[in-house]
Image (cartoon, rainbow, N blue to C red; front, side, top):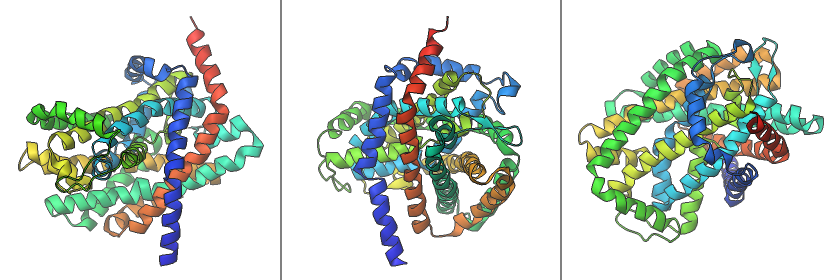
Length: 447
């Protein structure tokens, strides 16, 4: 077992090492330049289309509204990464890690845009008449038969990674947080979460979309408001926080208090890695949900999809990071969710940590819902529609197990598979980028 653990650790180091981070950032930058900065210049348009997309439109062209599709994506991405992931990045890389998170998000908007455009453009209907799409279908229908193995590899990685990264790891974080703050036993969290998850996902993407559209906007706004309270209390520290972020993005940070110090490379590595973990730009997952949206325009879907990266990282992760830095707790030696909780507690003594716990629980729960759909589509691609109901049952049954188990090894395997998903996706984005550019040009050329 020790040998297997060491082997997976080595593979994980390669998968999430500098070459992969350069590949993800480099692909995003390449796509942003090929699109002539369109994702940045059309952010306002993306928000407008998102708002307009609350209505379903042409019912024949998809199963859920474009807004519900985006909320399903956000349900999957806005999770423990926005609270524990940001805190870990700052703990290991210093305040400068937040700057590199922003960079990841800015180029990630182009990546996410291209993922969604290709997913919608190459989507198809399954045996039930439902729209299905994602990197595996873009590879199969866009690159041809000789590349089908690449789409299969993506589906295998995604089909297994979901059980860790999108299921057991999430409910484990929920159980730990609720036990620490409210003394709720882990098994109780597991059973209750299993029941609620089953009620939602057994109803398929339509029910997931409805729940996500109701829950995600509320949870995001509530979390932002709570973060603003922390920033208002520590308002005098905000200018200094930005100075720390920009200074330490390019210069090493010395050890201070409980902080061990960090080199610039650590700020880049952990900022980029945690940014990708949070917004999933480059992993290909966003296109899977957006392909189910009602639309006749891949470009419009792409502009709605890229807003998910903006909201996830540039708004929510920034709020967490600024709260941690402004409150001064980043030098306390705490890490993960405990560090974020300390920041909230500093501004709202007695209630701050409870607010953060509730936010973590809701964020993690919605991630379980969003990732259930990603995993389902991966297994449907591999096995066919007969896999759907067995997958949903196994997914629901995995929830209580995740709540009570020690998941160090499961987390490591899932994290590795999650990173491996990026390889087929990034290759397909680069090879199919001329199609994205052509579709984009044609869309904006229309009167």
